Structure formats: C-alpha cells, structure tokens
Amino acid sequence: MCMVIFAPIFAICAFATCGGYYGHLQVKVDCSADRRQSNLSINIDFSYPFRLQQVHFKAPLCELKREEILFLDGDYSSAAQFFVTVGVFAFLYSLLATIVYVFYQNKYLKNNRGPLVDFVVTVIFSFMWLVSSCCWAKALSDIKTATNPTQVLLLISACRAQENKCTATQEPLWSRLNTSAVFGFVNVVLWVGNIWFVFKETGWYKTGQRYPTRSASGKRSSEMRQRLYSESSFDQPDDNFGPQPSRQDSFNQSKGDFGQQVQRQLSLNQSQVSFSLPQTYLGKPVVYDRENKVVSQGPMIFVNEM
Image 1 (spheres, rainbow, N blue to C red):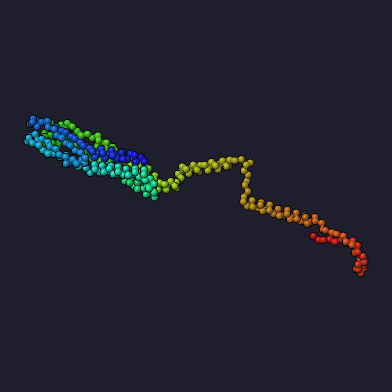
Image 2 (cartoon, helix red, strand yellow):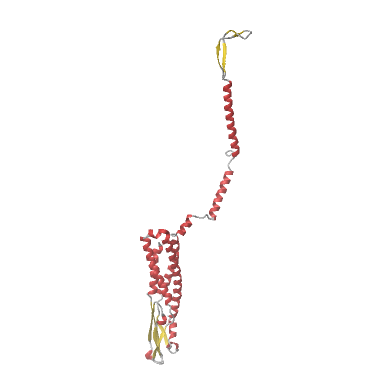
C-alpha cells in the first residue's frame, strides 16, 4: 500500500526535475588589443537531453577581429533519457496498480496470478531504478564538468591568450538536477522495500507460513520444559506414588480373582446340595416270613432321591 501512495509522487518528482531542466551559462571576454570587442558577453544554453556536442556558441577572436563557433563536449542523452523513461513507466505502472488494488481486488487475488505478476514487475522496476539512478548520477557529474566555466573558457581561443581577460558572469544552477538524482535513489529504496510487501501477497509466502519450521531456540525451550517436568515428577514423595504393577501382574491378579469367584460359587452349590434333606413319606409296614412272603404290612418310609 505504501507503493500505491508514494511511488507515483516520487516517480513524477524524479523525471520532472530531470526532463524539465534548463541551464544557462554566461561568460565575458575582454580583448586588450581592441577595445571595441571588450566586455562581450557570451550566452551558452543547454537543456535535456543534454546533447552538449550540439550546443554551440560564438566567441570573438581579438586579433583577427572576427568570431569563431565553438561546441561543448559530451553526449549524455542516453543516461538522462533512460532515467526519465524508467520514471515515466514506473509512474504509469503505479497508477495501474492503484486502480487494481482499489477496484479489482478480487480479480487481483484470484488464482494468485496478480500478486506473482506484481512481485516480478516490482523486482524489475527496483533493478531498473537502481541502474538508471547510478547512470544518471554519473552523467550529472560529467555534465557539471563539461559546463564548468573554467572548462568552457579554455575552449575559447581569446581566453587562452594571457593579455585577454575572460570571466564567468553567470553559472548554471544544479539544485534541480541534484534533486532529480536524490529522487532517483529514493525510488530505489521505495521499490526495494515494497518487494517484501508484495511477496507477502504471493503463494510462496503463504506456503511457507502454512508449514512453519521450529527454530533451534524453540527446540531448546521445549527440551528444557520436558526436563523440568521429569525432574519435578521424580521429586514427588513415595507416599503418593507406589510401585506400579505391570501388565502381566494385573492380568494374573484378575485371573486369580476370577478363579476364586468360580471356586466360591462351586462350594456354595455343593453346600446347598449337602444340606438339602430328602423328601420322605410314611407308608404301611411290610412283614416278611422266612420264605420271603409278605405276611403283613405296617408303616413304610419311601425316600425320593434328589
């Protein structure tokens, strides 16, 4: 979001201060031989894209009473135009990104294509801003050298003679171009810092957050907690914690309890059988003689076996 607010502003400041520059240099030639050619002012104007080899001016020749046409040295148009072009395209892309962020947020996040494209373009513009700012800073230094009044006066033949007097009455103002170079590096910082915020919107960052890895400090803290817990458990008194039976002992104990229950049930059934009385009833007695014949019958007892 910071790129949406500040990127267009700083991009405009960068290419506007560079592309709209106009410089003026004025020198004066005083010929000692001919007073009629004394106090002659020479105006030298240059501007963007700083093709100084095309900037020409006329200087007097004091001895021959005529003028010569001179040109400045250097062509710095490539660096200046590259810097301005990057600024213009960065401004246009910032406006497009602003419209997408505000009005097409759902389509921007759909299928993760919008954040990926935005991330790649942001990285490209960051690199382009860095290269163009460095090139423009070097070109600006060369432009200052080429338009230095001392350097310009050396191009004039009359000024190389010791009897003539040449001075610079007006020098170019470099504050505007210096500001453009500063804005260039501010854009570098802005776009490089925006890479992190755009990367957080991509699926790469979300995938890394979905499966976090434990750091070494986190592992050490967990091990320390486990160690403290184990030490505290061993420090408990013996009254609370006795020897714990094993699984086999528990199984044998349960098996013995079951056997005792079965044995107790069998003994109970046996006692019931032993203490149960047979059902009896009285009948008439029977008397036998020697030949085993029934003589008389008396009371008889019949036992029904259980």
